[in-house]
Structures are given as C-alpha cells and as structure tokens.
Length: 196
Ligand code: GAR
Image (cartoon, rainbow, N blue to C red; front, side):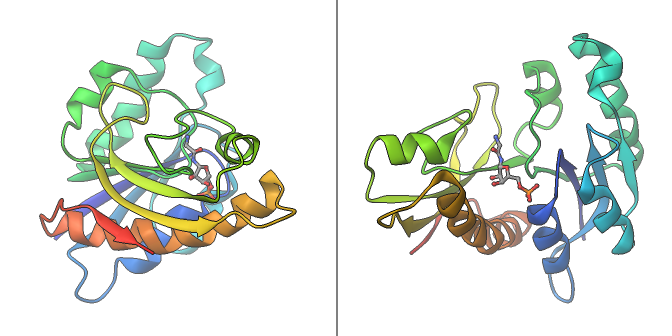
C-alpha cells in the first residue's frame, strides 16, 4: 500500500476528492494533510475524515524559505509518504525540497499546460478567447508547472463565462482527473490520461 501525503493551502476540495478515492482496492491511502495556513478550511475536512493533519504557517518564517521548508519536512518525514500530492498548495517550493520527492510529487494546475503556468489561469484563458479550458496533473520538477504531464481534462469555455464560472466548471473536472491520475500513478502507470 502506497502512503500519500497531501499539501493544501485553502478549501481542500481536491484533497477531499483524493482522500475519498483511496479506499477499497485503491493502491494508496492518505497518511497526512499539511497546510501552510493554520486556518485552511481543508484541515478540518481532513480531520473529519480521520486523516492526521499538520499546519506550518509560512508567515512565521518571514521569507526564509529554507526554514519554512525544514519545518514542512518534519511532519512529512515522520509520515514517510511514498507520494506527495500538491492540491491547491499555493507556495513555491525550492528545487532542494522538490529533489527530495523527485519522481513522486504530483500537482494539479487549473489550465491546459503548457498554457498558463502560474496564477490567474481562468482569466488568462478568457482574455485569449480560448474555446476550451481545463486542468492538468503533472509531476513536479524544479521548473514551475512544467513537469511531465500525467493527465488532462477539458471543458468548453461558454458565452458569458467569468473567471468564477469557468473555474467552477474546471474544478468539477479536477475532482475527476486528480483521483484517476493518482490511482494510475500509485500503481506505477505514468502514461498520460486524457479525459474528454
Ligand atoms: C484548484 O483549482 C487548484 O487547481 C488550484 O487551486 C485550487 C484549489 O482548490 N491550484 C493552483 O492554482 C496551483 N497553482 P481546492 O483547495 O478546493 O482543492
């Protein structure tokens, strides 16, 4: 059984979708949820699901990334995850941290990468008059939002869409895509999954 730790920053809806999926014959189980904000709503959701949680407040480290990451590593190392999932984790990790989890760290990003790495993905898709949008699960490498793609799901951009309506449509697909990719990844399958 693979051990999965999940890093979050906010509501944690992707974390919930991942955690719910890891039952029965699934090859992995959630062992820890960590947030960089003690007020992240996802922490209570994880605790309610019986998953151990930790919070490492990045603001306490005042821009000292090395110290923040050392604090983040402590609960992670104690939980000994095989796989680390970023799920709405909004801090940039250093190459040194990423190297510790090389080949076993995943992220979900709300765009059809390589389009729109970084922030404000939905507004950028609208500004570009894209006909479709979507989400990507990829392996995390030192370059932001640029690691090997493990899966994508697409949605249409509809007339009258705002960043809010589009992000809500994409989020539904995130909850479908990320569990599907994690299940494959945990069983050793890194072939990209293309959902319609
Ligand atoms: C999700 O849409 C995720 O793709 C995005 O943040 C949201 C988190 O929602 N992630 C990023 O933008 C990463 N740069 P959640 O906390 O409800 O899962």
